[in-house]
Every structure is written in structure tokens, then in C-alpha cells.
Length: 467
Image (cartoon, rainbow, N blue to C red; front, side, top):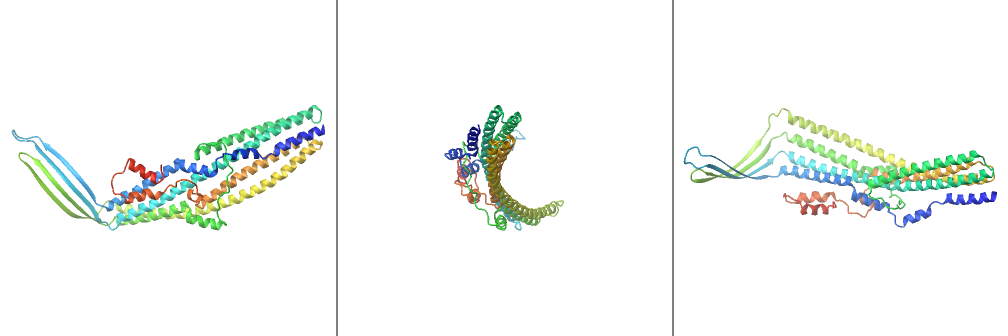
């Protein structure tokens, strides 16, 4: 009987020791890679598309503000008339066509400062778009790594259920020959129920991870490849912080917003001064009451506009602009400190996760030795069924803990890259057309001020990578 039990033990151990290499090899045959998943996330992100549209709207704000520096040319046509007031008179009909021009010649640089503020706002919005890009890619990395990790945990849980099922069968056989009591069989049944419950929980976690995968990446493929080593970050936390101060979009966005607020305050101050405008018109009047007659009128004038009193509105705008500038400076300091802290947190998370992997591997090695030893001792009657089940559970927990530590480590490395401002499509070298935020701005900055729509606008959007 002992020899039969030993044979069964060897089979169970062989089954438990399989690291699922065959399954992993099969998955690699046509599995989606992390790079492919990130490319899909970048190309299909509604969040990125939303913020790209916001950037184009900010580009147009510059055009609207810049228009204040240019002349305004209008064509005005009017027509009207009245019924005759006496018998025999014709209808009194009057028409006029006028070409009017108005141009603000000098405003002490108020509109120019406002246009510069809009340009700084555009630069800030570009950095905001980069920050959204980093968040999209980090969410995609997290969804990818968690989905693959939860698949491995489900496989471990399934393997555990099969192992305890065999363990229960062996316990029943030993109970039949009187080697163990009914209590041992009940313990095995209880542990099998717990293992099935753990499997259901793991399957639920996998379902949640797959839902996040679809949310951030798109369609879920059959299998996922093992993620590669994360790109290099920095040699030290000081180096990582220095890179973040130069590259992180949140810091750069806050700098541009502070610059825009300063320029806005300058524009508000200059708007308190007079303006000089040129106004002109060329009008032709046509009037028909009796014999038709027409007249041409030309007018040209220069206007000095100086507001003496407006109820304190301009002073309030001036004070408000400077208060917004102070707020933007404070936000810059706050953003800088936040990024420094996030870099340190991310660096610590990487260190902790890597230490957890080392500890989990050591735990697995010890748990495997203990499991084999307890099984052998149980075959000789020196250990109970509960001891065997506890050793098996310890091994499962160690393997599951390793998978979770690897998930945390992989996400933490990419999170550190994000906190340094380097988690971008360009830095990762992904094979996708990169959205160029300057193309749209440059095109309409140099294009004539005419309506552009339909096929022409579609061509411009394709050029910047929108379609």
C-alpha cells in the first residue's frame, strides 16, 4: 500500500510542479504583445481624441485674438422705401452699398499681449495633451499586465482545485483501508470547497481585468505575450527627479499657464490706456422719387478712445488678472512639489515590488521543499492530511504572491517612467503615426483668413494624424 501511495504522490507532485510552460508556449504562438496593445490604445483612445480637439480649439483662440490686430473690412447693403404721400407720386425707394474699414492702430500693446497669452495657453494645452497620453498608456500597461497576471492566477487556482480533488480522492481511499479518519476526509472536502471559492474569486478578478483591457486597449485577443523588460528609467532618484523637472507635462503645463497669466495681467493693465483707431467708408446711395439719382460719399477718420469712467470695471479686471497670475505661480510651485513627491513614491514602489519578487521566489523555493517533505512524511504516517493541505496552500499562496508582485513591479516601472515624463509614444518607439500638435496651428497661422471646410479640412486633419 505504501508503494502505491508513493506512486500517487509522485504523480500529484509532477502535476503540481508544472509551471504551465506548455500553456505559455502555446500563448506565444500568436499572442498580442505589450507594444501592440499600447499602439492600439494610442490609436483608439477617445480620451486622446477629446483632448486633441480641445487643443485645436485653443489654436483657434489664438487666431481670434490675433484678428484684433488686423483691419476689419465689411460690405453693407441696405434697401428701404415708403408709400407715396400724395396722388401721382412714385414710391420713395432708397438703396445704399457701403464698403467699411476699421483698424485699431495703437492700443499700447494690449491686444499683442493678449495674443501672446493665448499662445502660451496653447503651449500649456499641448502639455496637457501629453499628460493625457501618458495616462492612457499607463492605464493600458496596467490593464495588459493585470489581465495576463490574473490569467496566470486563474491557472494556478485551477491547478490547485485539480490537485486538492486528487488529494480528496486519495484521502477517501486511505479512509477506506482505515489509515485515516473521517475527519481527514472532511478536512480535504473543506479545503476543496475553499479552493473552488478562491477560483471563482480569481475568475471574477480576471473578468474585471479584461473589462479594463477592453476599456483602455480595445478588443481582447486570445492570448497575451509576457511583457518585456520596462524601458530604462534613471540611475538614481535624484536623476529621475531632475528628468521630471525638465520633462513632466504637468510641470511644463504649469509653467506655460503661469506665463499666460502674466501676459494676461499685462494686457489688462494696457487696456486701461486709450486706443487709436482708423475708420473709413465708401458709400453709394441710390434714391428714386421721381427721376432716379445717386450719390457717393467717402469718409475717413482717426479716433482716439479714452474711457474716463466705467464704474470700476477696468480696475476690477486689472486686479483680477493679477490675482490669476499669482494663483498660476502658486499652482506652478504646487505642481513642482507634487511631481517630486510622485517621483519619489514611484521610485519607492519599484524598489518595494522588486524586493517582494525576491522574497516571493525564496518563499516558493522553501514552500516547494516543505510540500514535498510533508507529503513524504504523510506517506509514512508521520503527518496528517491537514499538514499536507496546509503545505499545499502555502505553496499556492507563494506562487500567487509572486504573480501579484510581478504585476506590481511591472506597473510600478512604467509608472516611474510616467512620473519622469517619458511614458510617451515617441519615447517608447511605438510604430504608430504620432499626432503632431503643431501642424494644425502652423497651417492656419500661415493660411489666408478664409473659410476652410469639407474635403480641405479633412485633408488637414489627416495630415496631423487625426484620421
